Image (cartoon, rainbow, N blue to C red; front, side, top):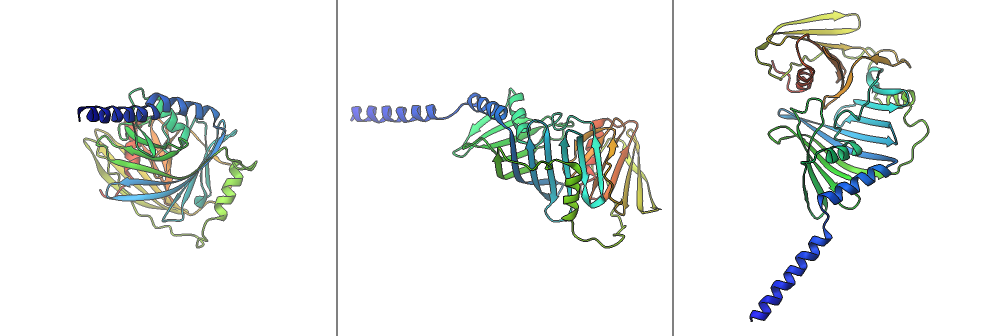
Length: 337
C-alpha cells in the first residue's frame, strides 16, 4: 500500500514538473513580445471600446491601421450615433479629422510615443516592457499583465490589465482602471491581422477626409444649432460656477461658463454649422491628448476639443495641465452643475 502511495505521489510530481516546463515565465513572454515588435511591419485591428462615465457608458467601434515605422490611422466611430473622428499620422505630421464638421487639425507631435494608447499594440508592449513591477499570470487561453500606464494625467487612470492571446500574442482585452480598480476604459479586440497590406494612399489626409465624408448620413441644410450645455463633474477644491452666458453668433450658438475660486477657468461651448470643406488643415499649438470620447489639443493654459458636433475650450491661468485634462474629461460625463 505504501509503495502504491509513493508511486502515486511520484507520478503527480512528474505531471506537475512537465506542466511547469511547458508554461512560459513572465520573462519568456516579455522576450517574445520584444521580438514580435521588432519584426512587426504592419497590422489592421478592429476593436470595441467602452467608456464608462459616471452611470453612463459610451461604445465606440475602433479601426486601427499601422504601417512601420510611423504611419497610423485610428478611426473611432460612436456605435449609436453617426459620428466619427480619425487620428492620422504620416510624413506630413499628425492629424485629427472630424468629418461631420469638415474640420482637420495638424499637430507637430510625437504621438503615439508620448503616452499609453489602449488600442495600439506596440504601445501595450511598451507599457509591459517599461514596468519592471508588472504583475503576470496566465490562463488556458491568455497571458495577463497588470501594468502602470503612461498617460499624461495617469493619476486618474494609473493601472491597466492587458490580456494577450497565447496563440500569437495578439491583444485580446485591455482594461484601464482608476485608483479604485474600476475599469473606465475597456477595449475588446475582435480581429487582428499582422503584416497587412495597404493601398498607397491609405494614410493620405485628404483621401481619408473625403472617404469619411462620403460615408456620413445626409444632413439637413443648416443643421440644428441648439446646444445642450454640459457641466464639468470634476471637483476642484474651492472652485464653483459663478456665471453662465449664452450668446448667438453668426453661424451658431456659444455658451460661456465661468468658474472662480482657488482655481479659476472659463469653459466655452460652441455649436456651429459645418464649415465648407477645406483641403488645408488648421495648425494647432499644443499636444494631442486622449480624452476618452475624443481627442483634444492641450497647451499650458488651455485645452480644446470637439464632440457631438460641439466645440469646447477651457482656458485658465492657474490650472495645471493635469487639471485641464481632468476637467475636460469630466465634461463628457453627466451634464449636472
